[in-house]
Picture 1 (tube, rainbow, N blue to C red):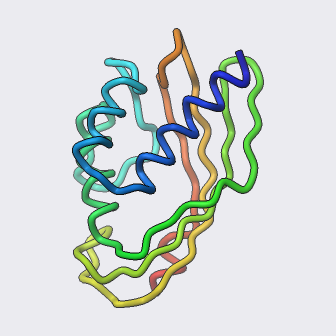
Picture 2: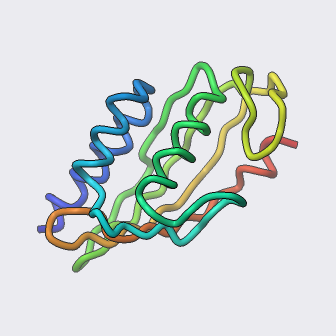
Length: 134
């Protein structure tokens, strides 16, 4: 089960990296449970699956030259922990309320996902994003 859970999260991450927003929305519908809860919200974001889709689409659309490297991934029981590094140039649109900075950024993020019935039920995250954009 642990390997299946890790593969589920890798699939989501890889689709985000590719950046096709229509595909990302379809994958989110397949991967996230209908009653999904995002525990780390930005202002104006709802904690549900639709809020997650909107936030992710807005974030991804703000960067060009975007790529993600999964540094570590550990699964135990119903949880998957992923440490990743994402890189991009903030030159396409607003991100977390900031106008494009034209800065190249490299951000480390740690995600914890809880998987129930083959779907992501909950997500927690922590990153150094704001420090990297200043």
